[in-house]
Length: 97
Image (cartoon, rainbow, N blue to C red; front, side):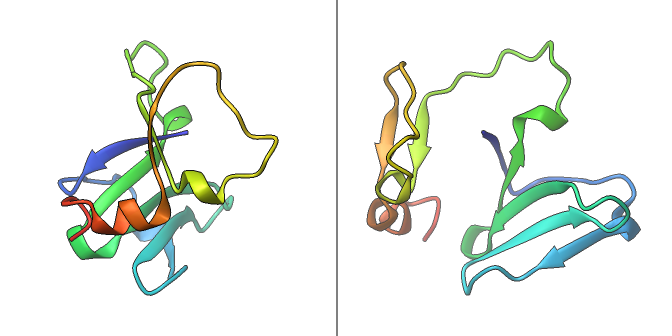
């Protein structure tokens, strides 16, 4: 569960953030001290996705879409209706290109 944070993201303690190049089009950020996953970033649009658990719990997040839905495990299923994008649809989407 991640929050789409756009491209204007500032981090405190950047010197402790490690970057892993997970593919040609994305990278992942992690804490170099404890290994906690901090974000993944889609490189073409500098789009950051940050785990929901990092934010204060009093935020009103809305779970309204899922991406790479065609790559999800069979056991992975949510009850609420969401807008679902396949891998192909993600790469064709204006936010990615």
